[in-house]
Image 1 (spheres, rainbow, N blue to C red):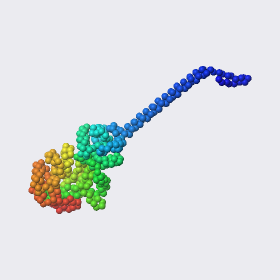
Image 2 (tube, helix red, strand yellow):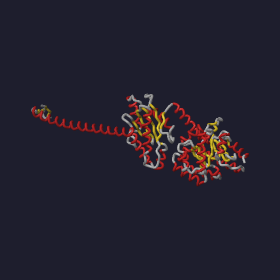
Image 3 (cartoon, rainbow, N blue to C red):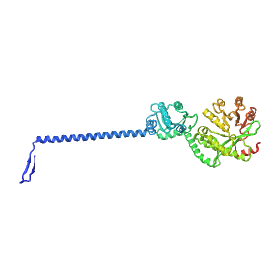
Image 4 (cartoon, rainbow, N blue to C red):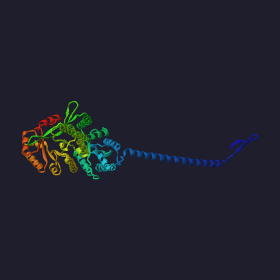
Length: 484
């Protein structure tokens, strides 16, 4: 009950409600309250569940973006590092970390387009997946680079698997281009080392087989690291050395075997450093061949010989052919012919005065392409020499198909003069070259006995210390003045 004043004569209104009526009304209000509260709680829970699920999906998507490679759909390098760290911590078996890329893969994109390049990456990724065993990992790192963590029982067993893997890569036939992988291997010895550090070591080993014709993999060691650092320092110095004219041409004379008259020369590069040291070609030529810097050095030597020939001709001296070496990298991966023609025109030099020397190992790489290049050089007027004949594995079979003009017999054969078997081999080579109409120059002739044997065999030309060592241009100029 409750009461309230009426405002009339101090009267109050007293209201009495029975308990059963009050309870009924109260229950109705409470029920409505419960229902509304339940609806609010349900809506809140549904909203909370939606938010949680949405965030979880976003998190999953972010994880996919962060740890999935866009091209292959597999793990990227971040995911690989996380999984590799876990595997190295828990797995006690012998493990090796490998880094791989494809030599000159940029040419694939340039020649065939990025779509084809991505397709090749996906094909290689599939080959990784087919090769790896349980507990092993691989990832596409970037561009044409891959990384892997593999078990091994012995180095031989590991290399056998890699041989098969590399063979499958070389068989990819989606385009007319030879795909050559280079793999660096770090045998894990310190598991506390970061995966990045292990990768760096594998990359150091990989750098030693880049652009090597028949080498596909190398193992990391400390000696290798020192050599890589030395090579890098040499690379960094090359551009400066060219600008400061530290490279120069030395000339090793070639003589007519019968008349002993000067018949020509071979231009050999020398590196005279600013402090007076001379770096031998055996130290820097292989380095520049690996990284492609040899192209610039080849062009420098060709230009230098043309300049020197022009100078001698203008001075009224007798012009003799001076051959220039042409590297494998220049032949197959550089449009050198047009550049060399421009240099000939610049100095007004006949191509007959600058023959080009190509090593036998280059000729065994892509015979069809090389034959076409030699034909084009012949059409311009160049003579082509095969250098280091006898150091390769396919010498005899190559002579009949390659349109070369001069065969240079390697010093290793000349050193066998005096041995009956060695002399028989030289006789056969001379007879063969004569039958094919190819002139023969013997390299590394140092003794009277060697010279006399080659003269009796009617070898066309002699090159070696027996007549003269490589000499600076000024000394060779003096030789031109005295020679008739």
